[in-house]
Image 1 (cartoon, rainbow, N blue to C red):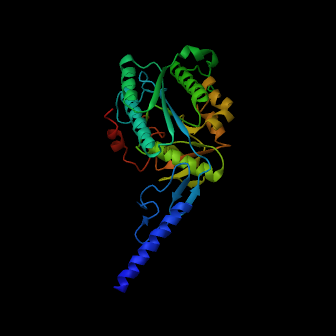
Image 2: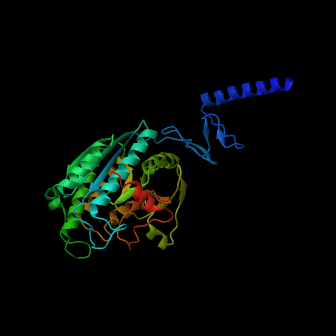
Image 3: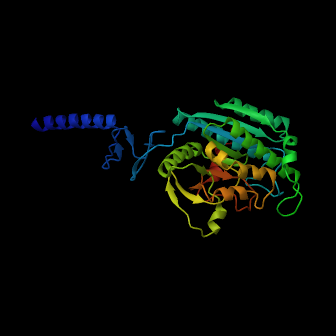
Amino acid sequence: MKKQNSQIRTNFFKKIFIKICRICGYEIIDQSNFYVPTQGKNLNENLSIQGEKSITLPLGETRISRKVNTLTVIFRSCTSVNMLTQNKKRLFDKNKSEYTFRSLNSVIKSLNRAKLVLPKIKFDLIVVDINSEKNDIEQIKKQLDKSNLKNSIISLNVKEFLNNIKNINAKKEKVTENQISNMAALHKSFLVAKDQCNDLVYFVEDDYVHQLDSIYEMIFTYERISSQMNRELIICPTDYPYLYTKVDATNIFLGSNKHWRKVEETLCTFLTSKIILHKHWEKFISMCQFEHYPFEQPLHDIYKSEYCLSPMPSLALHCTNINSVFGLSPNINWEKVWEENKNY
């Protein structure tokens, strides 16, 4: 009987101690059963609290000083052009519209997942469309209408930007019409972000298929690492395979559920802040005025002074041509991710 009373007293004091820890903002981890009694969660669940603290075992807690308030996603769509500069087959060998629809579907699903987990953040989805067929635009509108997200669609008028684009590129060749449209769409996206974005902005092309937790992971990672380093960041969602052909020094960071490494090259799908956009505005816009070689060279120049991070393994698949070193990221079942986004 005494033994039973002793157990009751132990449980009582344990409950009081847990309540005190909660009030004081501390966490308790019971490593014997992988349980966090202050949150009522197992260790394999998300223990972080958006805008307050990031918890990663066994490193413990990082206080969030860089809180994310809004995320604007600017999705550039074009179903009329299969490849910007090539005529090769893409991964999965489908019509271009199929990549656009599935990419948009994956972004919408990932945004809704982030919205559910991060209710304090405001999300906005803007589509900048370039010469897509009428039926395809209707399909894009249907997907936006079903998204449960604040959204809009902009039909690009390329003529607005023609006077800003030089006709001869860095290779001393004439810039193609497809590339001119691409540069105009990028320019429009930057202008929209500058005018309408209040915090983070994610520029994404219409051939990137995302995993469900992609945007959620990028936001948590941005808050955590930006708070640790006391600086703004650029985040790329894709682990590009071509970067493994180089032997470069890098830095490794711990995000919410991924490792992240510092990279110095990306393509034109990336997440950053309005602060970074304003700080390097001239370099961003230079991509829209002159075709560099490589095209993304101004971005690479920005990465010399800013931290650009890429996940390991990847959060998104770039559905480029079947032999491209920019495409199939390693160590993920991408066929499964592709199939999961077919019902749009």
